[in-house]
Structures are given as C-alpha cells and as structure tokens.
Length: 301
Image 1 (cartoon, one colour):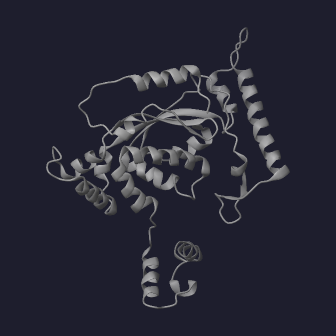
Image 2 (image 1 turned 90 degrees about the horizontal axis):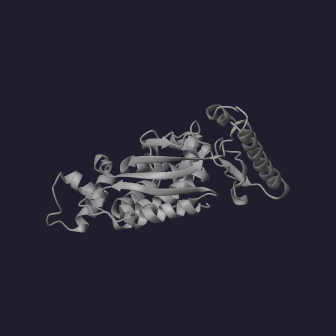
Image 3 (image 1 turned 90 degrees about the vertical axis):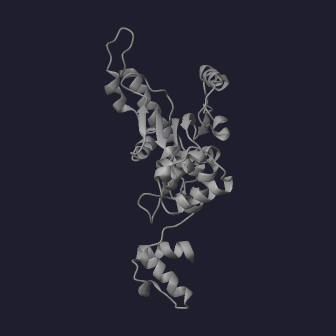
C-alpha cells in the first residue's frame, strides 16, 4: 500500500496536532488516529474520528453522570451482561468514522450493511487511480463444489499463472481505455461519469464510513467470521484490532458472546439435551434437515 509523500505528510501533520478537550478519550484509539493500516495490496483503513469509550456504554446503561464508587470490574460485568442479553442501545452510544480504501467489488459487498453513513470518492468528479486488486497466489482459489458462494482448492502452477495474467491484462486494458476516453488536450473526450462504466470491479475506490459500535459489532460478526470472503475479512480483522484498542471491555465481551459463539436452534438444543442423557441421536432422529445436521456436527462432533 504505497502512500505518496503528500499523504505521509498529511498523516504526520494530523497526528502531530494537539487539541485540548473535556470529552472522554480512549488511549488505545488516540494512538491509532489518522494512521494508515495497510490491507490487501493497495488498500488501507484509517480512524478519522471517534466518540465514546467503555465508560460511555455503562454510563448509558445506568443513565448516570459519573463513575461514582463503582470499580472497573463492575463495568466489565455490566458490559458482559448487556452483550449476553442482547441489550444493544448502550453500545450505540459509541461511534467511529473510518477512511477506507478498497476494491469496488468489496465495496459493493460492504455497502449491504445499511446501518452506517457513507460518503464515497466520486468518479463523476475525479479520475480514479490506476490501482487494481490482484490476489496473492495463496488466495487464488477455484469455485467450491459444496458452497455456491465460497472457494475451493487453491489454484496452482500454469492454471494459477493463466488466471493472474488475465486479471492483470484485463484490468490494465480497461484502465487504458478509460484514460483514452476521457477528455484529452485538444479532444473533447467522454464525460467522467460515463467513462467510469468501463472500469473493472477490482479497481480501488475510497470512502468515509461512520457507524455506531452496536452496528459495527454486527458487521464484524459477519465479516470477521472464518467463512466470510477473504478480501472483506482482511478489512474486518484490522478493524477488530482497532476496536480492541478502543473499547477493550466491550470487545472482549463481543469476542466471547458473538465472534467466538454459535447460535443454536430449538432442534439443536433438543439434540444436545438428548445426548447429555445418553441417547444416541442420528441425522434421521434429530428432526433436522441434512444441511442443519451437517452444520450441527461440524460444530460439536
């Protein structure tokens, strides 16, 4: 993720600026403000601003004016209680704004989370950079034979090289034509808002993305999961590290009750109870569909 000298200078200037404030700050988040965290080959994530900390969550739950005589352990217990019992409103008291640079096809998957405020780089107004996402060899996989929206075995040898060459050649050719269609010196050219239609889905875009902690946890539960598409998971994993520094108590509860947990159906709970009482339960006697039974066994067997 090469940054220009101007971008490095801008980040350094932002991080050097000191502003006195009476609002709550999180030391871990202060250390991350404005810094660019690389993702994929040309992508990045930066924290632009944030509001609240672990104490803001417990304050909202208690609707109090201050810490009083309670201890940190009380805060941790309350946050775990709120997470365990799906009390979401206190977590909405914290917000964060990210600057994200990502491939267009990842952005289209990301934007399905409609609980954030988004402002994207405008290709109607500006010209997109010549930057494309090309997968690393270890992430170049074939279509899964059991999951229509997943990956199978990693491509190797000549087949892997053939696909990589096609990706690079097609992206380069499309961008060459994009540039050729734009207004040139002495030529009228095509409007930017029309020329952009020729760009490939692996070209990079950028946006500012602002979201509250409750909805961010929902995003991370889905996108940091091991079954999520690698490219969006790479961003989610960096965001997990950022959130861990921002609200460590809330993140620990999230990691325990959401990220590392499973949701059981009534049928699955019934099967577990029957097994605990010594009964041998099979797919045929479980009352589950083949897919449900396969997922159940994948979790507990």
